[in-house]
Image (tube, rainbow, N blue to C red; front, side, top):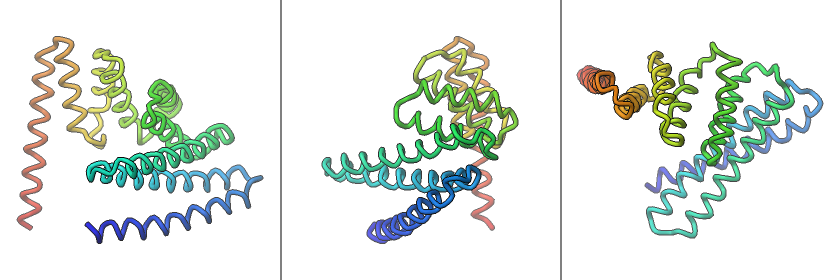
Length: 219
């Protein structure tokens, strides 16, 4: 535990230094929109890492019963989420032709979602899907929309539609989970045959993963 914590602290110190360098560079290239956008994209990624770091130690502090530290770390995490969001929004508002605008839109949506602003998140996901229909993150956007309609709106017609779109792409993150939620969407709609089919696919995926792991262990 101590070694992991020590490594995390060392990584954070390096990240702090990187952030300062990127901030300096963003000021240096403040009149060059393309370069500043590239720098802010990297800066936002560092802020996201910081937010995750403080989020993780906040959870640890909470488990250990230190509510005061947990609350402070949570505030630190939220602060870095806001800094990341501000960076992404600057790119979105200032450089509409940015080379990875689809990722910018996705990350804006993800950050709004994490900060409890789901309606804003959905608007950016919809814009990403409409503007970048060939984006590598398209299936993940569909997954997130499925989550929104399943968890927030309890609209299982929409959640089923988006989960189904996401499940068509084998590279979708947490594909098994997406199919699992698709099965529950069908179940809540009373489409029991489709629900059973999706649940069966989830079980088969689990068996396949187990078989693949066995083969890895045998090598």
